[in-house]
Image 1 (cartoon, rainbow, N blue to C red):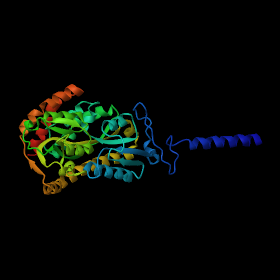
Image 2 (cartoon, helix red, strand yellow):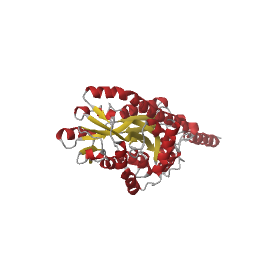
Image 3 (tube, rainbow, N blue to C red):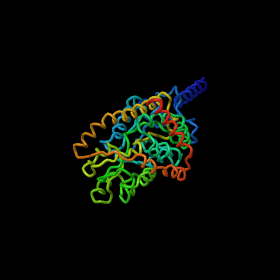
Image 4 (tube, rainbow, N blue to C red):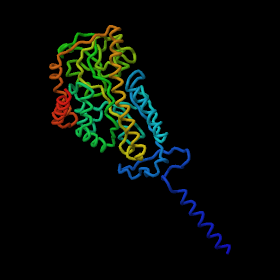
Length: 367
């Protein structure tokens, strides 16, 4: 009788241990937060079951280069807070701006390597993985945010995003835009010839450097914080950038006063994270993540546009002036950029024509 009782007791203990080992395959329950590691082969088999979403927790580091005065910083800060709040802390996003963590190409590499990571970077930085990404934001394409959004919502862009996903780069949103980039110097610039022999600061993006070269200038790659001292010391004579950049951190408008309205590139960034990590998130939280990403991107676009007149008034009070340029001349000068994109990244030579068709379609329907 004692032996039967002992066997019954052992059986009950085994059953109890099995029950404790079930559930989400890693979470300890209660208030403990456990990062979920997705399947190494990208299949998503390790994703938390949908009926166990309440036991899923994920901490993400979110990095970019922007300063607190810039709209990308404001939108990033807002996004991190929004995701954390709306997912009730199941996805916690901690934002690191001002180049505190990896930025530019290193940020993209973090996603490819499947870190718990989110980035906001210039789209041509994805061209090392899918060359067509550079063509999508090539020079002299767009005249407005609306044209850009129309293209971003197209099947052409969806195809590029699908191919980036195969490289473990999930594009969360493409709408983090803050105006258009123009040439900012103390020179009188109306044609590409006016920039010949003049050195201007360029970003780390090879596309931006090539575009600036085709605009007529000699590009000198450096960080924007270095740019201001370089202008003061005469190393460069200006930069290409947006209104918000000119009016932002470090008061660049105190050093350069003339804006040639080339509007050669839309100032935009794409929000991204690892594809495998994204697929590991239960639908309940992933849907909220998607909503927050889109909402903050559009908030930045709208807020920046509404704020631009105020920024220009301030800049004008500081002696900044704007002048129209020969857009046909600058457009023709930038033609070689598209050939370079195809040669450098293996991009589809036909893609630019398809983009122009889409943009003309939008213009015809919204004239």
